[in-house]
Image 1 (cartoon, rainbow, N blue to C red):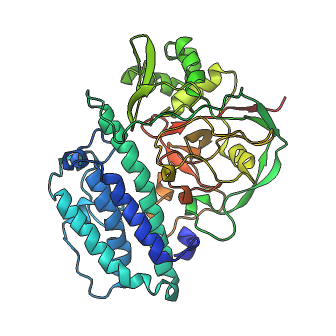
Image 2: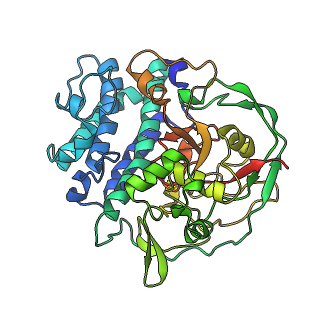
Image 3: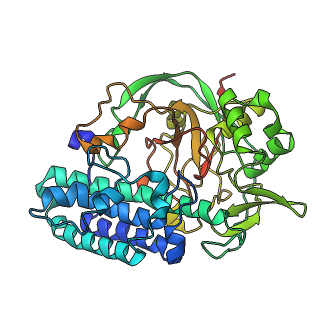
Amino acid sequence: MEAAIRAAVPGGALDARFADVRARTRALAAPLSAEDCVVQSMPDASPVKWHLAHTSWFFETFVLERFVAGYAAFAPQFRVLFNSYYQGVGERHPRPERGLLTRPSLDDILAYRAHVDGAVAPLLERPGANADLTALLELGLQHEQQHQELILTDVLHLLSCNPMAPAYRTPESPRPAVVAPRRWLPFAGGLVDIGHAGSGFAFDNETPRHRAFVAPFAIASHPVTQGEFLAFVEDGGYRRPELWLALGWDTRTARGWDLPCHWRRQDGRWTTFTLRGRVPLDPQAPMAHASYFEADAYARWARARLPTEFEWEVAAAGVPVEGNFLDDGVLQPLPPAHLPGDDAPAQLFGDVWEWTASVYAPYPGFRVAPGAVGEYNGKFMCNQYVLRGGSCATPRSHVRPTYRNFFPPEARWQFSGLRLARDAA
């Protein structure tokens, strides 16, 4: 088990972390009505009520059923209703039909969370006595932090479908922008060490650490901004098939993409939809909600390319994990509050996940762990691309330079942006 998920408690008492993570998930649902929590706006998204239940299902299924003798399930039907994709656990309710689950009620789900919390509490007093228990508890917390971000991105998509353009949070005055032109930062490359090493938690897909060759390259000093992407839009970027991958152009055509996700031109001005409602486009803020296809087309238009995930990790080496995260409560990408030195890329962490040119594939020597927990990452290593860096909806403690997020190339409801790279001159 330890080798499968590479878990270690990352500092702080596990019981305090458990309480904090579980409370934060509940707090994310607090601004929502019961009606908000049941609706599923598209097959890729899930209702908030389902997220609240599934994160509890994870602890019940993988921790309580294994480590509590004679454990009695809160409701046996929940084993099917809130199983996401774990074939080894048993049947699953179809993902596109999660929004049809008007019952159990939101109150029932909150009672389920309280039941699971109460059953886990005694285990938190003795996790050090069992390495597998400690590893699974930590994996469950990391899993729940992933769902905290999904709650926000799914709510954003849901509210964007409402003609009233309701806000999840009250709008606030934007932060003053720190304006700086794009600079190209050179890196020598060579044989580099890639992947997680040392203490602290990492998912299995970040391992094993291995050596890779990276040719000399340059990476942009900051992520592509909304203003920079607007130039692509106004230059006909969505009408020029020569800029797009064939599958990307087919997707753009089939889905009617004429503009970036959530963008609208209204009364002569550009706006975008955010968790704070519809707001004016901020030309200095990072571009968000771009698919891989859009990111790749923009890079080609800009006569550049997307970095590989190895190049991104090289550029991130030694850069502090600081930025605009979920903890800050802003919940939308912002211009940088300050600029780093001449040799350091800005906003590598937080604000927006950055698409890379790398397909999501196993590192050399990767092995899928046995059992249902082994289904967590490995079986998705097909038809997906890697993103790096975290977003404004990611918990700060959840991110590290080796973290590999992944989505299919057409996905654009996440806080996904891009940073340019190019070969060394």
